[in-house]
Image (cartoon, rainbow, N blue to C red):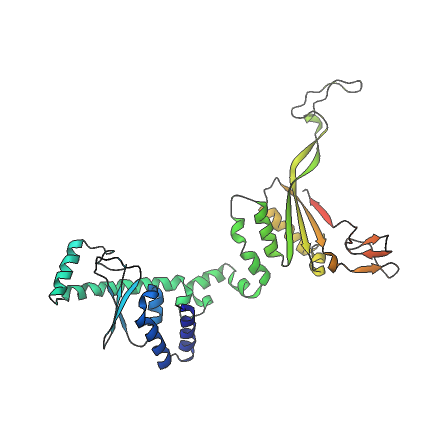
Length: 339
């Protein structure tokens, strides 16, 4: 059942003709709701039924048989449509009253006595209507108003995400990866996902276990006796330096955009934002290296003698007597964060 089409069609007609009944729309909804009501969930049915001018009364199922659908049947009467609902009822297989009351109710129905059933249906109808009103507060598609006017939309706007989702594409992308930041388990794959969400049209790679030689403080060194120094019993190490195999990670950012590549160079605002984002995610004792790579087809060629400057963006290529920006034989821009 194409429920989205019916909902959108209902919203557009209710907005344009708020006080005017639409006979074509009512006829279409009548056919869908009356012929196969069991194909709808309860709240879908109630939303579409609200678009029909004829009132609906919701009654509970008193049968002991199990029904897989929310809506069992629709009884069309002159003054009101009675809808039999499964699951939300005082009686029935899923009701709260004992089986004795179910048997008593069924015996009365055999004798055409519906007084007790009509009395209980007053409560059933109110309970079902209340559940629908509760769902409308959290599911904005059930309301006849825009998302930012709903309670959920107001909460989203109050924390600053509503306008970002509507106007700022970059922040909208990074918001999709926000739950990762709150996970206690940190992983390189999640870091890659965060950076790729923040930087569009980039491929990020994270290499682990980047080692580095670390100097040992003199008080921690253990020095054996020799001709020039006296022996010293240090507390930790034998030697003056050691290789730390878990010093940090290397993050490689590949991009085709020369503009983005320029913005990610050292001392640029976007570079500072990326470093802050990485520092916010990785553990405090992990250092990182940030390496940029501009793909070959986006690299501009600067000829010598034509006001070319060697900098972060270009290197001399002696084979072709030209200056290639991040050329094929040159090293990429690489910096290390070792604060």
